[in-house]
Amino acid sequence: AHLDRIGAVDGAVHAFLHVDTEGALAQAAAVDKKRAAGEKLGPLAGVPLALKDVLTQDGVPTTAGSKMLEGWKPPYDATVVQRLKAAGVVILGKTNMDEFAMGSSTENSAYGTTHNPWDLNRIPGGSGGGSSAALAAYEAPLAIGTDTGGSIRQPGAFTGTVGVKPTYGGTSRYGLIALASSLDTPGPCARTTLDAALLHEVIAGHDKMDSTSINQPVPAVVDAARRADVAGLRIGVVKELGGEGYQPGVEARFHEAVELLTKLGAEVVEVSCPHFQYALPAYYLILPSEASSNLAKFDAMRYGLRVGDDGENSAERVMNLTREAGFGAEVKRRIMLGTHALSSGYYDAYYGQAQKVRTLIARDFEKAYEQVDVLVSPATPTTAFAIGDRVNDPIAMYKNDLCTIPSNLAGNAAASFPCGLADEDGMPVGFHVMAPVMRDELLYQVGGALE
Ligand code: GLN
Image 1: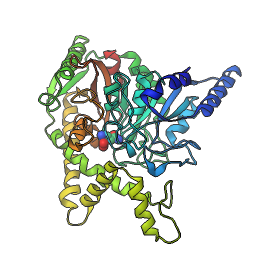
Image 2: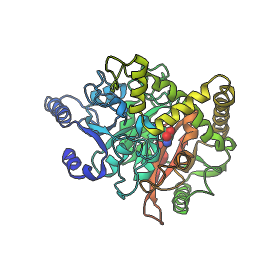
Image 3: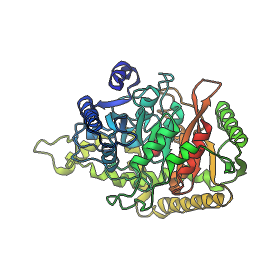
Image 4: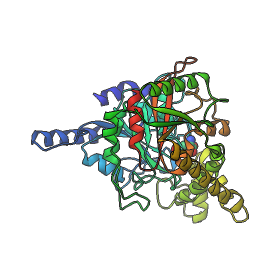
């Protein structure tokens, strides 16, 4: 039924870059067989899922939204994919994204933009717009995203779906094509809080293949989603994330949701995180620095594209021609920013300074969590904007990430839950919840209560 649905609507939505019809049917048949044999199956066995095209799946084309990797078939499964397969989840295909996960709209994909199912003239968010659009268009009930600066939560907010960024290190990065290794976090996307929690439990947990993976039990997210109880929970509204520059319809739905949580017994206070205002500039130095280093491996020798290999050109010339042809404008912009920020003479002024700011932001969180259990804000300053609106204005595009980036810099858990539609444009609004490291269950308690 989901493959049929993809066939019917994906021409207009363009959530998928690759639909693995044969593979999906084979996985589904394998689950049926196990069920018929009386094997005990997990709660997600046989449930279809859309996979962001930044995670490797053995033998299935994986592009990370880039021409650089066109035609590349990885020879192994990411840990997240191994765990999905072990749980009997049926992977329908790979979803569209901004190239190497750089962006907030999927307009940076080398394979065309994804359209927001709520209004096809608008972007679905990014970088994981394909995964969230697939959910909103009922092409899949579950999806996987990755969140480095908001790429799960912002598309979740823009498509009226649930998007969770687990604690950094709570889900494995093995087999994830790296954007910024100190920030990248795979996580669950779904239409309901409980579905997201069930998926979270399947993919999370320690992995010896990822040196930053946390060796602790997975937080009890499914229990929390079922309890959906906020009585006595201390909730801090972040003063700095709201007000000027925020769309009135976004603020209205956000404050209504806060009122609802108060009625349900939560204690709500205002909390100040004074360094959050520097999160965006710090992120846009740290991320390009790490990305410029991670993308050095796309050298025309190891993966995918190779241009100008005519027997005459030197290896260096082939490398230059390939990177010139294979990377899009945003990727080149960030490689230049990153190499500049890391260069000797500038290192302390840019990268070093940004790392200090990162520490101050983590301290803001620590202080806040002495007073409250979770922090909340709108997930994004505005609802989904029109396709083409911000493509030529990188700064306007970067401002999308105002609310989501602090949690990435501090490595703690955060999620966006749907909280209604803005009056101005009828587009979905996301309610953002942030919780301390390895307290991911608190997100689900709040998300469940809002449903
Ligand atoms: N908009 C952010 C960026 O472009 C999101 C990145 C991400 O989470 N992958 O860097």
